[in-house]
Image (tube, rainbow, N blue to C red):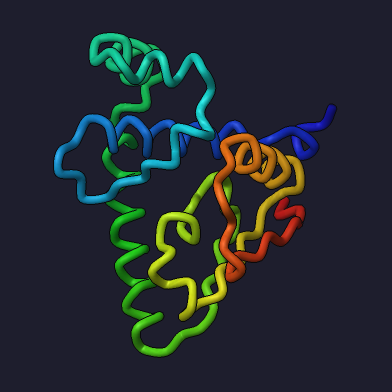
Length: 150
């Protein structure tokens, strides 16, 4: 199966970084309590152990340098999006949304913004399947747009 027809490994990696950051940093500058739903069983198991997380994530995979960049960037971007919504912007488009759950996490904004999540069909389908499996309600303001961004 061509890579475009498979769910994105990058989306899972970003969800894993967000999950680990949310677990490890109290209080976090950015919290994504839904990220773990999009991580493999193996990544969830590693995240429960600081030593395994460090060994597998930082040493073997070499992802330590981006492990803080990702939540800092997410916190900054979401802060800017919230400011834009408060200023009257009514639409938010997430290109390459992956397993981002802004609309699910920020239900306080559901009456103020339409959240468009654009991503490749395979990743988006897996995301929707996992949301259904976990019985996570999708607010009416979230629109899933399948598209090949390559």
